Length: 315
Image (cartoon, rainbow, N blue to C red; front, top):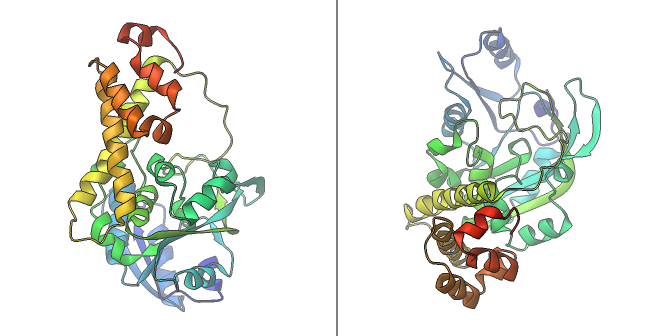
């Protein structure tokens, strides 16, 4: 296991077995007996699903820094060393790196994780400078297999919300923790490919980074559905933030989060058929259409009568 081959050994390894029936548990027991690192094994009598199983493993972790690991990926020997160096900065609450994509047999696919998620140099710079909230709220930026974070984030991240379950979760656990880390402190980005990230059809999340055909042009109904989904993502975060007023959240980032929530609420009410022109003008005066939309293009779309929006295909 590449976790054992680190230049800086881990403090402990916590594994939660989600009701496996293929001999995995016996293999884990043998591994624990031979492990040079303290191992804590948790076993579910029945399958609990990704969210609850991850929550169980996180709750059982005792270290100050938690490093997420997928069992079939390969770590570079210096991964934990790089993580430890980054967390010497007390402002850093979370960290993630790039990864090399490999297939089920370990063969390189000739593609990087950040390439697959379109996390370009501008996005990297923005996040490193404390920006990038909208990108994180989208939930397709930080991959758990490449992630580490301070354990005190669990005070607000747990319990993981129910809406992280299902075929189309609002976030996965990694994206959820990343958003809260950003609001709480800083996220460090490391462009090195410190993980070989395995891609195969049986991934539990179903979120393979193997290249697929680009989406077609969205209809008005599809755009309205995506707006509603974004509103749900943002509200999930704002509700958790408001549930922890004792937390020293970053005031500037919270201001941006709540401004975005208000903007999306306005757009949602317009999409539901409420009178639009006055609301559009108000959001334009605040600069929110340029900050969170496509400027006048989005504003003009919202100002259209509902009947015309339903006939159009693009805003």
